[in-house]
Image 1 (cartoon, rainbow, N blue to C red):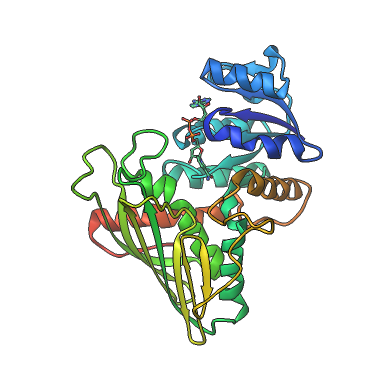
Image 2: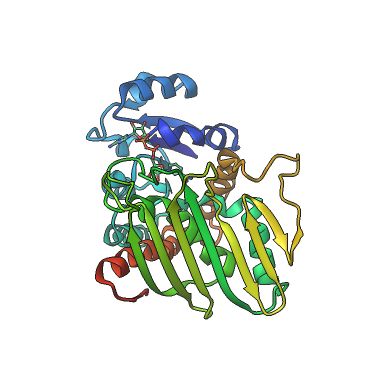
Length: 329
Ligand SMILES: NC(=O)c1ccc[n+]([C@@H]2O[C@H](COP(=O)([O-])OP(=O)(O)OC[C@H]3O[C@@H](n4cnc5c(N)ncnc54)[C@H](O)[C@@H]3O)[C@@H](O)[C@H]2O)c1
């Protein structure tokens, strides 16, 4: 599979293990508007200068390749991906799928119309802590699930995202947590109400705190609390509480407790779950993408499926702005 990587610096760099160690993957061309990032990546991958595009207005999508790995900030996603799809490429993109819900819907529609494969890299689904929660929630170990609490604590400044935006937290950060909820519970969200705000010490642009309550299709209520915090504890995997008719699961600072007893809370080599090992998890995403391209069934991280997670972000925004509970389709 010949790949064009668009957006090679920043988070784009974390794709290198997946791009260089997955059998059958070859990085054929690179696109980046930052000349230093482009040069450094060209050196890393050994991509010749004639296959490097220093501006996204150049016709990079016509370069002979099978797929695009897209890792620029999300405000470029729609324009770039519509071009890539139109030029016959399949696409693996980082989250969030887009900076607007409507454009994400259009992208999924265009991929379906052209018969192209679109995947969103929600790699944290395969973190062992999240997989364990999913197993407990879906195996019946907890009985019938009644409610879920999940907390995301971030730095005192709050989550600002890759560029100035109105809702960096809900669109770029919380998308992971909303995707966790659907994945762990095996159910989509049907309704949301929310209060989005900034604590007084935050004066910059963008809303960085949210309290949102989701009603899932299976009736479970999920209460999401996401706040800037004085503590050093940044809970990207969330602190969880899942209560069922037969049991209770909690996680705090990446340690898991089933009915009060600590369960295995580290990687197989003893490393803390706090280490998220994203480049390792991205290999799983790459494998799913390749299987999908080779005729495998549509994965849970397809663009079409991911719209259900993105709808939770934009539904929570709308609920906060209107002061009214929102229905999620
Ligand atoms: N866990 C995760 O999945 C995770 C973590 C971090 C970031 N991300 C996502 O990665 C994306 C990028 O975030 P970042 O912080 O690395 O951003 P960034 O600003 O560092 O940009 C990444 C790269 O894209 C390049 N770029 C920017 N605009 C471009 C354009 N128009 N055309 C071509 N290249 C362009 C930049 O020069 C840079 O090399 C965001 O959408 C973010 O949500 C995902």
